[in-house]
Image: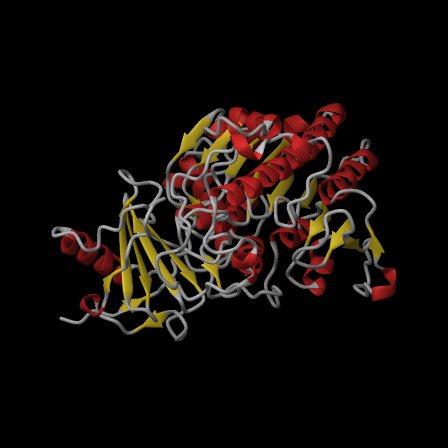
Length: 497
């Protein structure tokens, strides 16, 4: 029987357990929030999470003092600039199909905090429209309205409460982007040393996005000759995935060579280590001001990057290296040095942070995922929060079951569903399918779709994929393709060098 995939994206509702540990319940001050976002950072680029080459002492400290999600996904993108969709989802809390790229008509995460009486400060990259930035923050600095630039000459604006930001007010940064943005964050923290108002700080780096140009001494910190190739390195991707000629894929010639990929990786690691040092400056200022004990710190990247994996260089694909990203919580009430493998989306941060800070916005039902970050609320407190939150206009429908899988999509060219250790990827134009066992093959090197016992796993994933329709606006037609499972053939694996 022909079965058609229906891509109905499930919003995970995870926040209502986040604020109820005892010491917070009796605290006078609401917690501050520092949300730090990197750009194009793979999930495997933090030393404390197993990378033996890279140096990231300050991100390591967040891992050691907090909770890390090891299966946090960017849900995909409707654009080649994957960061546009990813950040729109993060800032709106909406799924891929509902998040507006300019956040038009959508209350943003910092806007909720501003409406709740927080001082909100934004600095760094904002790739989702100027109007949404102005209503999200009541202050800011070193604001970059764009996607990428020369890291040593970033065009930035100072904050304009009237949302004008004319071209003539633009200035060119005179330091590396990571230093420029961290300077603004540190200046904000320094300027509020005697303030009693809680704050929300949004610090968005453009590192380690290319051009990969770390300053000295980070430009020579990693010798290309010593850089290990990704375990799934290929000279070329084995088939056309629908996005082989985009800018990112032109950063290295075909076929990719080990020497060139190692050069990219050395510079990439240098960018991350330099950014880590700037994050350290922000953490140090929080410590010096005495704010750290009452500050929830969230670190994440908008998505990952191939940079040689599967013969690709960019993030316009649905492999693990490109859609998974670091996600770390650290702060009061957060379980320390804990790693959890629950499936989640990066935009789940929206609900987690709002409810942890006790800000009316998008509070949600009891959820297993939340217990992995903060101790659970007692029953009375839970009921109180739910009753209060359901009267809030910003609260969407409630998810009544634990997320069993994650759905990913890139434009109308690639679609994927993961449940447990199994993952299916479909390429409609090519009528190709991949099946991976992520437990046995975390680097996705062997497509099992052609194996004799594959039909059972493919059918199981296919049916569960169709069933995941809990919270989706079904009038959209962009999220569907009419193919039966037997219309697809196994995609080829690449030849390893």
